[in-house]
Length: 234
Image (cartoon, rainbow, N blue to C red; front, side):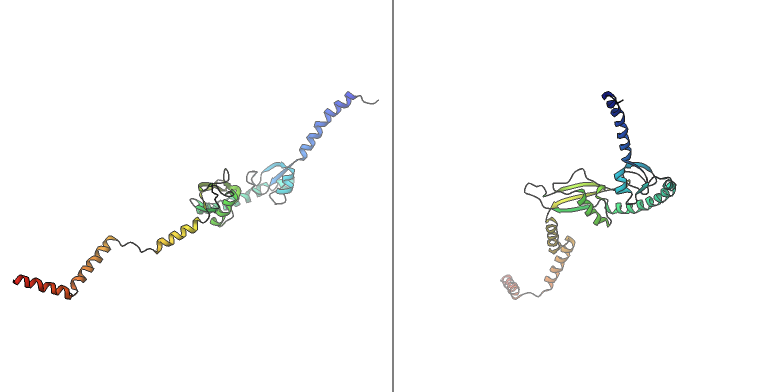
């Protein structure tokens, strides 16, 4: 006996959700994290993540492994190793933070006639300059910049270096050639003679007066004195 149309319709309604559920399960994979992945999980934790994320990123990079019974037996050892690495990284990043805190990054850019930059200063640009200053690579994703900078000025920027370790720097965006002008002005200022302190100037004047008293009189001065003596005698 062939099924009627209402029967086929009911069978489709029942089967379709089951197929959708199976497909949804296949999109996820349960993994054990072997290393800390900021924003996702700490080493030793087990999470379900998207299948593509696990197969294309986490597993090839050794950040995670499928949560099989054999892998789950390693949880305690993985957590112990990760804790030691965190302590070491915390100490290293504290040193980096000390070098960066309060620092000023001067960034020269081209400025248009309207006062806006040609282009923009981005988190990636700031991370590159901060890496040179800190002598260590800084991830641009740790630069907490709400939006790109489009105008000259001084901007306080927070950099998240590691977990709760942060550093606040000042990003000074200046027109192109600003540093050359400042260097030229500084050089010109150094070439000028240093002002003589008042005490030293007074001592110099006193010495000049003493020297003048010790110098012999000139012929003109002697003639004037002779004329004064003749007038007195008259």
